[in-house]
Image (cartoon, rainbow, N blue to C red; front, side, top):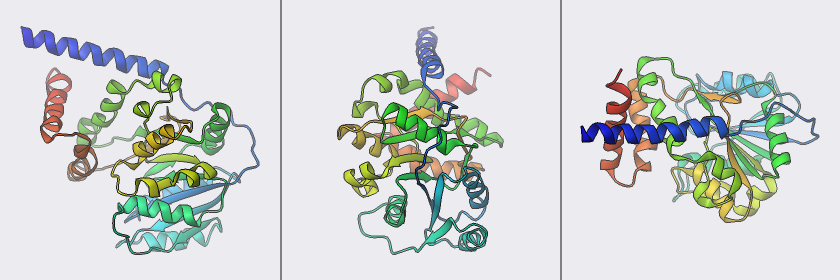
Length: 293
């Protein structure tokens, strides 16, 4: 009986916080003011032959606000390079950034993003994962949001596409952590590093601030570079936000149980300070969200 009360209390608390986040976490507004700015879309890609065509198609639909689309082929062993060449022949804005050997002390994605930034010419940098898909006119809407809120960094928390059984069973864990722990409304009112959050699938920076704070070079050895950048921004006195972007960008991170498990081991497990916390978290999810149904 005591255990039942504990589980009920914990679930009720998480439900309340999730409801508050769902109602009070602002989304990217639908207004998009025309802006004569140049946005560089920067995409690190490693073995993304299957994802790149749809990703690039969604970027090209953004219109002239995107001045260039740079793709860093990070030593892929599939047909990623061929995809880039084929699509670059159709639209001159698409360009491959030559890969260079990974330097000591760098994580691979951070190094790729730094190379992309060095090659970019736009006033704004939009970093996208290759599995990201943008809705129409999103880049203009994000820029309008940044100008209105006086931001130099903006991330959009994406909608997760979940098609298979294992995706629907396990992938909600990622959103569960954020919606039940992160107090989104407070992050709007207080510019503290402890309230910083970001999702690496969609990061928009003002170029001058990015270069001034060191960009990805400042977090070169960090696995969770997205949130580390968000914390760095706030610690440096810059304004940065992560908004609910479920109607702005969508991602399908993994497609099978094997891919999900490998991804969790690489990107989710390290988020817990102690390994036992990870397994307790999975057990809690199983008892509260699986067994009752």
